[in-house]
Length: 297
Image 1 (cartoon, one colour):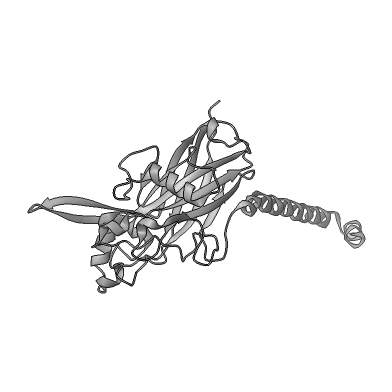
Image 2 (image 1 turned 180 degrees about the horizontal axis):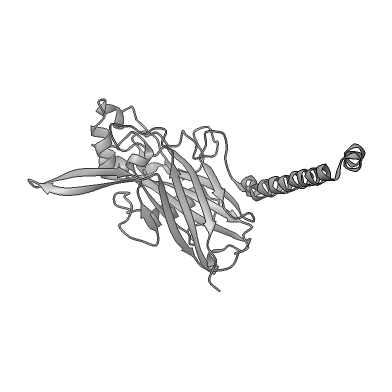
């Protein structure tokens, strides 16, 4: 620093001005760099288990977001006697990593599809909106890594799945089976496991299509796929738990038509059926963003 000051003293007045501007520029650049780094600090509140996992990001720097995944676990051929769980076969927590898949959709023995839906419970804590009513936005983004130039209906989760989202007091218990069964009752029809036509949730799909009747048979066409789903959901003051947590529930289940179309477009059709082998759809989900909107007074 002394050398720097002596350089100022010994330099001509014209150069002193230039040196001063340069020094000021360095300071400003440093301030901008620190500000940019600080503005990204909320990333430390995100949940990501490894480099290949789906990221969960809260866009409020005071909010921590974590999730749990719940699926139906059962022995082959004995689906009715299974149970809801948030653990895999090795007793590790289920995650939304690239290996995440729904239970196999069977296009022949459709009774096997009763417990295909999976549920993601997202826990938000530390928000300045705790105890208030308002709305939040959930953005679900897919990766384009598995897209094909030849067809929209690839063997990916975004090609065959429906998604539904809600806040609300579904089940704040730690018992996985209770969480699964309560969420199932909210989102799904008990008779067939399909997503209800309507309910206290918002439902969307990455892949859309048109249906027309030809000769008494449905014909599906105009398949299109978007890269992002945006859910706007409301929450009430009573949805917050006593310890300041708010839960978002995301239902992931098959669109029966899309699942069958993808299956029948596969040259190895039997591989998709639950007949001793299964063909899970590649998980191409990549990021979930969550942001609170300004609450109502």
